[in-house]
Amino acid sequence: MATLESIAIIGASNDRSRFANKAVRVYLDEGLTVYPVHPKEQSVEGLKTYRSVLDIPGRVDIASFYVPPAIGEKVALEVIRKGIPRVYLNPGSESPELFRLLDDAGIEVVLACSIRAVGKDPGDY
Image (cartoon, rainbow, N blue to C red):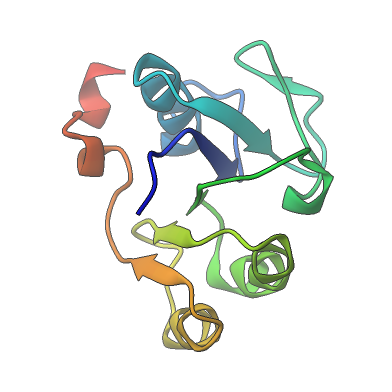
């Protein structure tokens, strides 16, 4: 896979105790371009927030889901249309249907905490 440069955090939050906010901070620390995605927030950690991954300009390398499976299934259709090649389904966001939907579309699905995947401890954020 090509060098990873950008990530969409689906369900990004301004609540610093939430994993979706911690993920934004972790990936900023990792030097990636971070796109917070939330239908109601205007910004997260000073970054412009997008209502949909389809609103993000340019390529997105990874999407990390921090939403319940029912919402994830709707967002997955947008991820497929956007052509995002890899998705992290964080604990609580996964379901067999969501996995199958993404996998059938040829997307690499990782069932893991995207924060720990880069060797970080969420408790440090």
